[in-house]
Image (cartoon, rainbow, N blue to C red; front, side, top):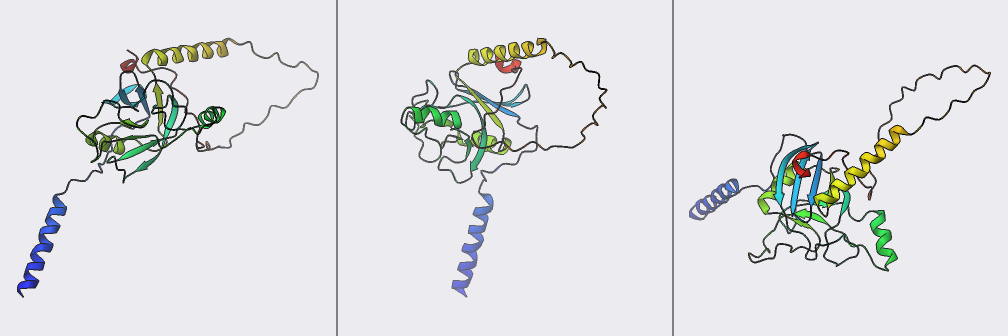
Length: 234
């Protein structure tokens, strides 16, 4: 009876300890995150709902952060328009969500150099191997936040969410300016002249077929927002 009683006590203590253990998986039912924006020079990541900033985080980048990632092992964090395409609940960096690098352009660029583009680019936490005197940019190309912050990001950001990674705000502003100029040119383009003929044409019946958009293919580039958020535009 003594051994049985001792076993029951140990089992109860283990159950209590497990109940008191904090889960790294948070729940989130708030405003949807529609885009992530990262400015590399500022080391700032923004979680956006349209043009509203929901969260802002200081981040670490790859150990050679300047410039777009071109080949495996260069230590750079990619630049451009990607999307969140996977997540790892068992990451050695606490938790992580994957960025869709490389896309087809990245692959072609690396192949032109006779190299491979690399991959496994994530937004992740620090994990147990992080050391307190680590440099600001300590990853192999990923985007790093604290363990507590990645728990929130992991809960808030869904797979398929676009992420735009800019060298700086100035690059985003230049991109937005170019997009607005293209939009104006498209609006001001002269309409095609109608074909004049003698045959009366019966108006075509309206097509009411609903076409579901195809899911984004791996490597697809997410289009940037047409109007940047005032909160992040500087």
